[in-house]
Structure formats: C-alpha cells, structure tokens
Image (cartoon, rainbow, N blue to C red):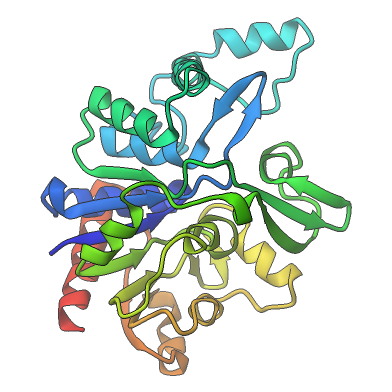
Length: 301
C-alpha cells in the first residue's frame, strides 16, 4: 500500500517514523510543511523538514523531539556571549545542517535537491519532499500585530493572541517536484497529528486530495495538544479546542478520522468513519502501533 503522509513538527515526524517502521521505504512519501522556514543569522532554517529527517534517520533528540541527539551548544553560547541573537537555539550539529543547506541554496540548488542529498547522507530511505521549492512564509496576525511564525512560536512563545493566518508568497509558489505525482499514485493520504492551521493548511495549498482516501489523526487529545499551540489557537479563534474541531477543520476532505480513546464520546458527532485508538506516541513502539492501527483502518475503508 502506497501512502503519502502530510507532516509538520514533532507530531508529524513521530507519525511518519511509525509508518516508516512498517511500510517498505518505496511505499512511503512524506510531504513536509515549509511555511515555518525562515532566515536566522544569515542561515536558511527549515525546522519541520529537519525534524522529520532527523527523526527518520534516528538522529533526533529523544527528549524534545526536535534538534539533534547528543547535541553541544558551543557556537550559540559564544554568539550569545558576544551579544548576538540566541532566542532560536541552534546546536552545533544542527548548525552544520543549516550552513550546508544555505551554501547549496545560494549556489542555485533547489530545496528539493538539498533534501534528497541530505536524506541520502543520513540514510533516510523514504521519499521526503518539501511542499514547495519556493519560499512561502506563515504569518500570524495577532493582537500585537503580524508576526513571522518563528517570531510568534519561539521568540514570543505563542503568547500573543492569534486572529488570522496568512501564507506570504503562496500566490507565486508552485508545488515541489514529485508532490502531485506522489499523491496521485498513493492508495491513501494520511494527515499526521500536526497543527491544522500552520502545519497542514500550507501543504494543502499545493496538492489536490480530490477522490483520494484521506485519513486524519487528531493532534488534540482531551481538548489539549501534546506539543505546540494548536489548542490555544482554536480557543483564541473562538473555536472550542477538541478532536471534533479538528475533524471539522478538514471538512469535505476526509474519508476517515482517528481520535484518541479519551475522546471516544465525540466519535458519534464525527461526520466520517472513525477509529478510536491510543494516539499518544511516547516511544518507538507507540509510533509503530498507531501507524499499524491507521493502516488497518485505511484498509477497512
């Protein structure tokens, strides 16, 4: 069974890793959000792409889910000592990734080419694709003005109240090579438990899911998110944060929806077929178990 997973952030990376434990590498393509990419200290940073790739390569920090395992912090500590910006904490190994990405992009390579080469170096056998090679930047309209996503998310720690989201550059951007073909040839598309507003919505601007079996896994459990500001965003936008709100967010796209056992009482209100499962992924075994449950669910559809 050929699967395309739409992913962003730690939850998406964990789901992708669970699928990678079960599916042959050629049968899994992960399309990753690049709306939160940005430039920091002259470096081209791709947080979601790196999180997905590090996770599939077994290089991710197991405690945070992002960044590199066994990281050191000499460069950023010395930058901070010299009075430079340090609010986006880059480890030494991580900086090597950003330096080489920046060098290649400035030399004329596309982001897709860079990701392919990096995955080969890290021995990631699955197909990892950015949603676009063109710069698209998620802008967060808040009660304190419009902020770039990383400014809102990391520097301001999600404190400003959100009002709206805008994807700067979207009108001029095109989908990355291979993304549409991957979706067209897939047996099903899985929307990973990523933030619907700022991780998945940007990807959906570039691909068509018409006539596809699409299943979404809720990132909200018991009205809260395991990581990230999705529940806070729903609340500030006047929507009660819940798995049901996530299903409604994807209205018209889904054939099936996966929610946690904590939210089983909501399943009767979901407009598509549901799977009630343990969606919390604390370790590798949890990831594989949830992935297998979702694949079995897809077969039943």
